[in-house]
Image 1: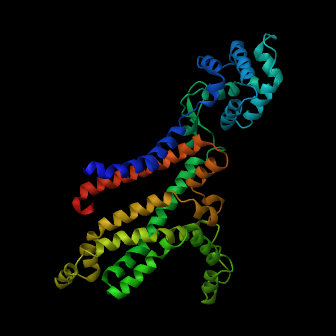
Image 2 (image 1 turned 90 degrees about the vertical axis):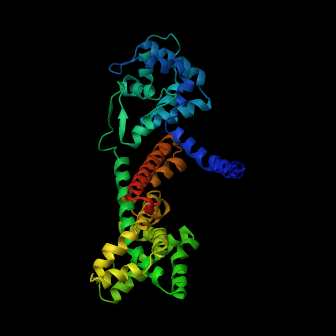
Image 3 (image 1 turned 45 degrees about the vertical axis):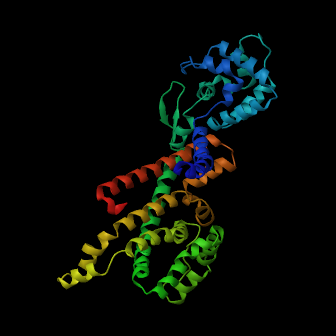
Amino acid sequence: MAGALVAPLLLFLAVNFLLPIALMLFRSVDDPDVRAIMPQTTAALAMWDGRDLPPATVATLMIGELDAARGGADLSRAANRLNYDINGFRSLLLKTARNLPAPGDGDALQALVAVDPRWGQTKTWAAIKRAAGPLTGFFLLGALDLKQSASGDIQSVGAERAIFVKVLGRTLWIGFWVTVLCLALGYPVAYLLATASSRIANLLMILVLLPFWTSLLVRTTAWVVLLQKDGPVNGLLHGIGLIDEPLRLIFNRVGVYVAITHVLLPFMILPLYSVMKGIGPTTMRAAVSLGAHPFLAFARVYLPQTVPGITAGTLLVFISALGYYVTPALIGGADDQMLSTFIAFYTNETTNWGMAGALGGILLVITALLYAVYGRLAGRAGPGWA
């Protein structure tokens, strides 16, 4: 009976949550496009060592298969896939398909080189070999700024093309400092909520929950107005004499920190408040009555009891901060974009589902690792952390 009652919810979660994630992750290793139009060519290239140009028989196979695929949608998809590996490969493949040499017209490889000199480069054929499918590690390696050579060695893409590891580090760094800011601001607010009278606590709780009732786009746009050069924040600082010239508070890292902290602050305050509300005042009074300084009593008696709320709040804030997209896009500069921005770019702009799935998989793995670390720490600390 219990299983029947929860079955609709489990089905809903499987269809709307687990299945899309599984399909997105599969996209990061799925690579059928080139194999669909050149099955014999990719099979022949699997035996190629990648050191010299492939034999002319491989070129002959490719000419025949390109002739059969010419004009179809499969050829365009394969060209797009190869263009992910080498910029300009789409135009090369489509140009070659339009100007195919006649079968049996001399050396097939030299005939392709006559169409375009790039067929005389090993990297061109290596890209086709890497796209042989049906599964590939190309996108996952690319998401880590790595690539696979024609001989199968894993190597760096080079400093001029390496970007995703740096962006991943930036994402973790922004998430870390947003979590620190939320903890520093949220802890005293949660303490005030837990110790204030009911009338004051209810009013403060409304203010805490107010960001939840406001559109994310409206909140972000409001910070654009507040933090701009001639905005209220700079006007206030100038009016009280703290600055002589307006500060640059927007389209940089400062604006990103402020806006994301504002949005995620309730996720820190609410877990802390729920824990603090259950802590009675008698322990602090007992510590002070026994001669402890109030600061020492707070550090040794009160603070340890709030560790479960701190842990839950930091986990919620940090994991949520990792996936932010709109706020950095509107308030941050070019050097403040997070990994989610690139996921959206590959999903909406270039329709490169493989790279979007690989980057999304990295974020998912990091989130799962953080949750596992939290579970392990909670297990060591005992049931009070749960």
